[in-house]
Length: 122
Image 1: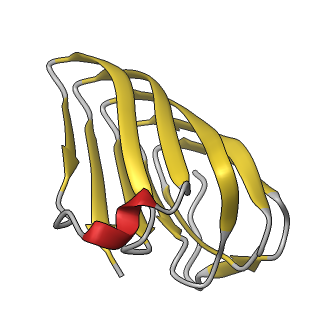
Image 2: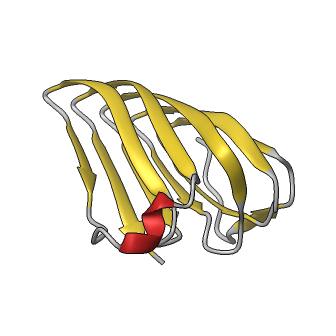
């Protein structure tokens, strides 16, 4: 079981998580974040980008089965979701703001089966 009781803080430009029957929370601090990979099988991953920054478009590849991914996204980032959902949900809970046209784009690609993907404001 992969479980963390304390949130992990990362200053790396890439993030990778693999969770089977567990949960992980990562706070990303990179000011030049470049992307990552998330894999969940009966697991939960929370990524917090509230103190991170990106330049241009970055891609996070997400593969999950019976899992959940929650991503805290700064309000000036635009989120593009390209997820194949099979009995799954991908939902951007943030409000659209004019400053989302600054060129910062977080692209979420992958597959969700019996899964939930949510982006929320931070």
